[in-house]
Length: 416
Picture 1: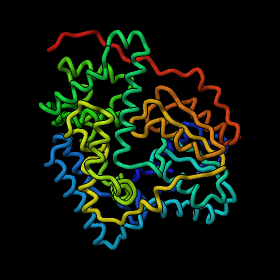
Picture 2 (picture 1 turned 135 degrees about the vertical axis):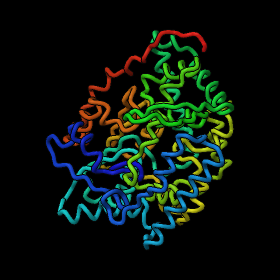
Picture 3 (picture 1 turned 90 degrees about the vertical axis):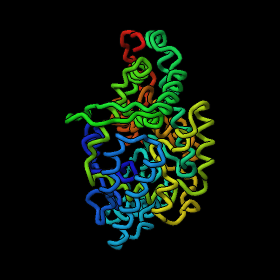
């Protein structure tokens, strides 16, 4: 099960194969309803084009939000005009599709693996259709009973602070980059008050593009792991000394999306039906202030990775599904719960939280890894393979010796 919601599951196959998931068993991959190759496909080229332009706009300016909402409404109107029932694209129906697939293929029992949003989906599937599930492995966990816009700030704080703590635990990093938390707060405040406009080349090549770095953009690049964690202390130090290059190049990557590949329509239907209801803009801002006191309210008012989502949901207009979706999964089906300590999208502690009611679960924490653990960690891939062979007694021995990789150390420089 792929993440997103809205990601292309077929595009994940090289990562799964590279991790050895199918080395000694069959691998079945199904695109979720509404995603690439599904009919109908809930792609939103309108939103893709907005994101391409947004790298040159202030991340959290009201005018940027209006452009996003306009693109979202254009996509909604087009899909609705084609007769698409957007309320049918939700995690309940999504889970039922996988249950139907097992029956259609005549498979008595299978193992289920999902990452990111697909952990929300996988836990929903286990709760509603437990029959036929031999085991469930969830990677970078989104507990369905807890996910909301305010929740994203908790995960951002955990992931970012864990990166900083890992730097402090390495003498070379600690000595070269002291007080990273203070440096980040200073840079968020500085860029929010005085955004930088630079030209940067996208990492994939091509002509340089205009990039605007404000406080919100900086924070979201960190949450998205757009700058590799090992480079984050160096990137922040360089930024503080007048060189925004690493962050600017990471922001420029957004200028060249593959138009129509990601199903933003599925994202909106799930977020607006299941994640946004029940929490106000004031709740979101309060969660941001708790997570990062001292940061500007203009940054904290937008959920990481989901800016202007309340406004977008007003135009997307699907029913509130939280009564049937914000439910804890309680199960004795053997489960593997994988988290990376550097994950700022789905904080590592939420894996252990979900595991509390998975009574035959093994919880594994991989140090120094961010979001979507298995493709990034040979140890995690080994644990998953072992789990699939022996769901109640996987071999987790490789975890004990793991530590985060050394952080990048660059020569000290004077302020420019």
